[in-house]
Image (cartoon, rainbow, N blue to C red; front, side, top):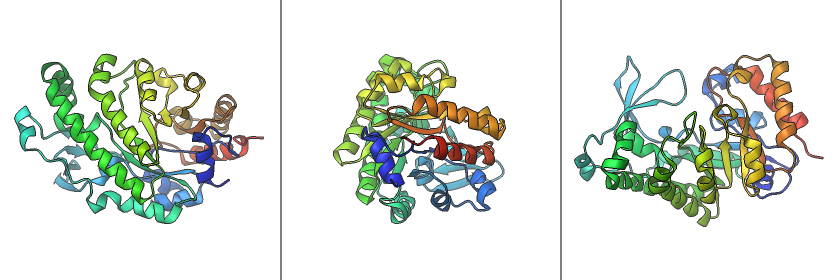
Length: 342
């Protein structure tokens, strides 16, 4: 099997030749330490990554530097963000300060060509060879960025109509990009908004179901209607809303992090038509442990998760800048050696 066939087998409920390998994001600094360059596609060509994915959604939009010293920019959404040592910038301030601001607000054009430049290159290079994905947001992140997290959650009580309008802007924008991406050759869309905190959902299950779940469902149904698969990334503890999340029709769920109170094996056993993704803590095992200890951990994960298929191995979030290159490579070597099915 090649990578495309391997992943397709897993999410279709069949047993592949080995456990597929996925990462939501690989920091370019880690890539540079390994290869001497920061070319993600060359890196995917060289190493056993089965799923190739466009960069974090914030990279789809033009940025204007407004404070070079502090690495602060404003993007096409009108959201002020700050770059740190990590790959993804941090949102600082949104443009919808009052409900009246929304009356004159226009979201970025979803069909602008820069949104699809990276995807076009991935499709040209890997179509039919590796499983190709487009990384997008869904119902929560753009409303959070536009309004600010604290104010948005206040709005769910004091101005619910405003929240519904913001969610609709986000959902329509992401559906447009998703449908275009599928037309260009994406095999799947992964929705990257986080609804979980360390101890539970960021909002009550009731608020999730009222304000955000319908939007996620709209995007998933749109993706599936176009003949593609839809994966969901969601950090944190989502035990209270996981039934709702799975009910949208997603094909895979990532990362089900044990450090946030998730039991990835229990989720796999409970939802037999769902593919689970994750298993390796992106903290100490990948940043501090010896290669030998890391190999033992990955073997243990494979022993628990491999039987019956429906499993794609990855870190518990992403390969951030602190990950030791030798541990990352050891993880993949271990999967290639011990992740094979009889």
